[in-house]
Length: 256
Image (tube, rainbow, N blue to C red):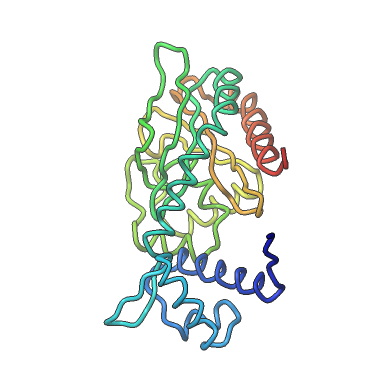
């Protein structure tokens, strides 16, 4: 027999998801009196939902502070989703590499780091290579800055406070206000650029991929020697990167 979900049940599910998203964006544990107002719920209702999520392993309760954080099941789901995204992205990465003749990458934001999920190496003698699974700081990479640009300001601030804005080269952004302006620029132009900010002599151009809910899901990018990715070349390939990222996004919205 098919089970029907009542309107109240759907609303409870939405509020539970609101709580998970809130805890995922928080820089520290949150108490019931912080969670309730943040998601528009009475404290009693928030407590019941938190108890259910804790029982199922999606939320952890610290018995000493009586506060909550994301649990192992939520983290496991995020990791599993990333692994399943890579094969879907593969044709778009291959097209990106063929179109731009540079190494293409797929990456997601995982807590305070950018994690590379897949890569299609360029067929060139000199090319960039990043092992899937590698983690890099988001503020110093084109893909990382794209992933940050579409996060809530509070999330960006929390990541910057926890991870810091470490300098890797003389071009690395290490000032919070400068990073904020850079992220605003990325939102306006629809792509991000890393000009030797993580490694001298390397440039990266990235564009966002959005999920069905409209939130950023991943970033696709190409990376190569700065000598090849000069301003003239960037003018040619930026529209292609944006196009392929847009087509990838549209494929995720399709019911087929």
